[in-house]
Image (tube, rainbow, N blue to C red; front, side):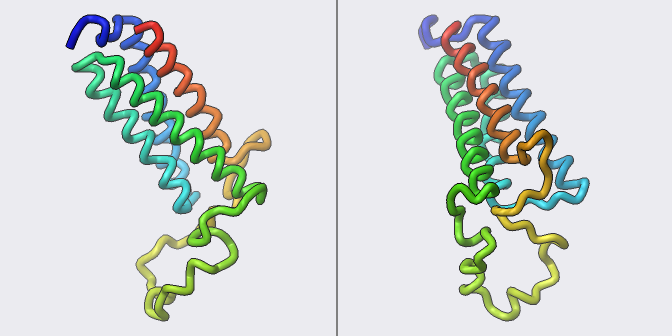
Length: 161
């Protein structure tokens, strides 16, 4: 790897701060889950890019690379986009996936045994229901805001690289 592909020390620190931010958001999601706010399917989708950003940060710690910083920015942007889409589904601005919205169309492929199974979460949360909100934003909305900020930090790290 040539020197132009490497991140400077300050850029590397910014990238690690962004990765840690994803770690904090992911930890917050699991905390809310532990407090009884069961996640819907789209909530889980928002967690995967955060986990990837954390892994990218861990690799970047050992191997500072502009490519990895770009991947971190893409991960943060992806979860911000999913969060914004999910917030719109909750607000009924657009339709969400039929498998996790209130119309029940996603239940057609389930057997009676599946519907009566007791090994599921105690509280089923649909993607178009707001389970918690603060200052007018639901959890996916806050995820979108904070993830967009993390994306900006990744991009600043990349540009200063």
